Length: 497
RNA sequence: GCUCCCAUCGUCUAGUGGCCUAGGACGCCGCCCUCUCAAGGCGGUAACACGGGUUCAAAUCCCGUUGGGAGUACCA
Image 1: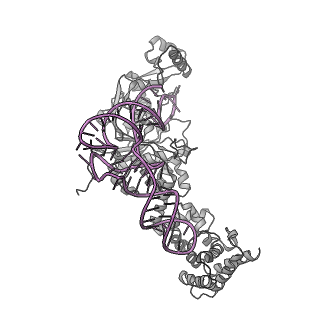
Image 2: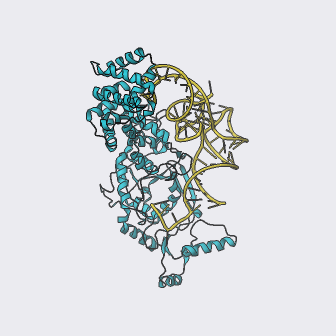
Image 3: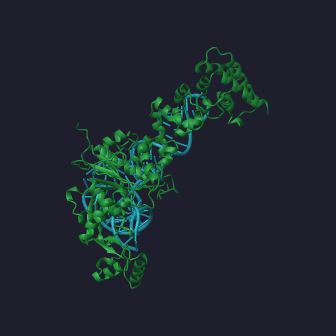
């Protein structure tokens, strides 16, 4: 095959190992899932391994509910992991809260080798020092000022004797870090922008950068795919590799994905746009649509090609083709794709997808009615949530049937309703074609009504609504008894006013 | 403030120096089809942020400006 595109992708040798490492402090959001999708697709593309690692080092924010919800959502969208909670793996456990010993070991090594030191300064003392320095004309420096870096032994002993709490800080070397980001290219960051960062809390528990770096090494990850917000944290992670003597040939490569922002360009948040994947699931979106749309936010399969399956994405995915611009989340586009996926589904499958929504709305779902109803609504739905509105009139018990759009029935409706009733009452064959014929003869030819005006009242009478699936098929599915009964009901409604 | 990143239709994007009078999709508008609403078909609206270079040739390379975004935690 010479039609293959020029090979400019990310060169890969050896086994690929990627991960998604969410903090379980709430629902997985669209950014998490987009990152997971790209990371997963890259691993799958190269027959590698995809890991789920839960970053719950902050006990005050992590919850078991969120931990469970994370897995549930990942299952829902179909991003499966080869190692992680539930499936285990050679580097278990995969919950950072259960890996304390690993971090403590790394911390001890770092302190023993002098790469980490105890810092006793409180936040107040640090703020006071920085304010004083600025008052004397010094340029403000980012973060911690390095005060405890070169404490004398006597000072340390005094602090220790006083029982002052401390955190372990990393002794960031001078110079700068340059690395090649798979999506952004070469990045250089001057270490003057990176203060001696904290590795632990004052209770000794490990912080994100330490835990992530240690685990990425321990779990032999080869490619770190994450959000652009972590770009600036990369030199710290690299410095930790160096300090912990992690062999260069094992250092993972980094790929920082552009952020997903709300439709106003501001950060996506609970207040601004819907961020939770759970929300989309609960509002009738399909996993295939979510994945397809999320893939489009920063990646494209080929020119003029927007609809594709995850399998197609995996076959073509390449980190080197990921966009560098932040992408706005567009609900309209997601809905359009959801509609496309619905239309592309096999009828039986769509029926299965619709059933729970109908049941949740309180309808007893007759399999035969569902099977016959699906083709009537397949091209009319954008979200699965619309199923009850569209098909409810076929499933509702007669005594609960309501003329939702009763206001559309007027005195003028009486004639077409009565004529319809008469025409249908004696119709020999009950099928959509003869039904249509009979109604056209009775209303259009008989009463001289425009089709639009003729069928409107009938539609409302039979389905209860102004908007419905095709009328004649609907009448056929409803059956003669129910149809006549509803026409009678509508007539009574009209005459009773 | 400082550092880093980014910059093509309203939005997502194609574009890797000539194929670009810039292509597709969503949205929006119009027409067709039509029993409603969709779907479908056809057509339209609409962009290379700005200024300098480099080059025979720039949306594509370089510099600057402007505008966005991110980072600057004992969150992740």
